[in-house]
Image 1 (cartoon, rainbow, N blue to C red):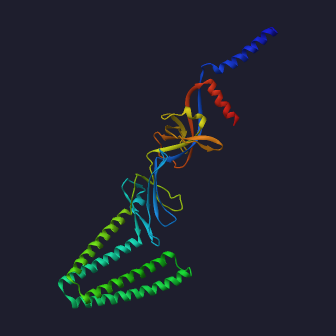
Image 2 (tube, helix red, strand yellow; image 1 turned 180 degrees about the horizontal axis):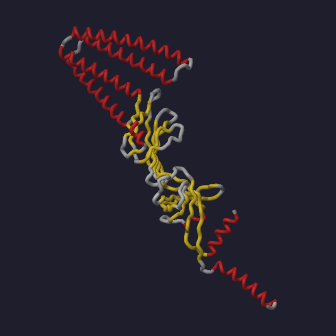
Length: 354
């Protein structure tokens, strides 16, 4: 071959290489990403720093918190959540199951005080209507003497506990229990004094009507507190498994194990190639065969990850195996089909630059 022919051949090859990327040739293109596995829904009940409780329902399919419930208590109150032992032993729950009963010391104390007041008012009403004064006065005096003695003992215990608390020998909860018991004893003395005074003085007919009104008011307060107490019953908002406590203040959690979601950060340059309904091949930890997941949502928000612009892709695992691990990382392969050769070369060169 002559030198001139070789030159023509070389020029032709260069021109061909320059022209080929612009020809309508399509080639297969795939890319990979690392995703994290979440249940479709997860519910958590946890304590807060103020002594209250709150529950949160996470919807990882949509990337939102779909429900938040708070249980707030008065300052100085002692609240606790008594978990259902049957639920804990079973390990699984159904939507609507009662998980726990939250108890409030002050609420229970108020119910006790109001109950005592109600009994006093009803006894007063019966007495005034019956007109039996001497026996009632004697009983009222005995009740007052008993209440004063209880207050004296409660005060002694309170003073003792205060000294222990000041010296850091007992907890704040133990001291507050003694303080609340002393306050309750003082209230009961005042009730007994009022009862004795009413028995000795007697009441007019219009005062009987006032007693009836007080009884109705106390009954309304008791009904309100009982309704509030009913609201402290924690009911499972979803069905699923009892999860492990992974947070310091966590009380109990439920995870929906029927559906699993993979959240995958994908580089922004691939956004036009990813569509809802696309299948992803993923190698789940602990599973030998490749598993298929389906894209269900593309985030419209752009985030920065390792100096790269990414958006979040959410995919649901098809026919998930039994051993899917919440929070595990998994490699995901996106098969975008065939793209134009020039687009393929552009993307490859973009990856090489990094």
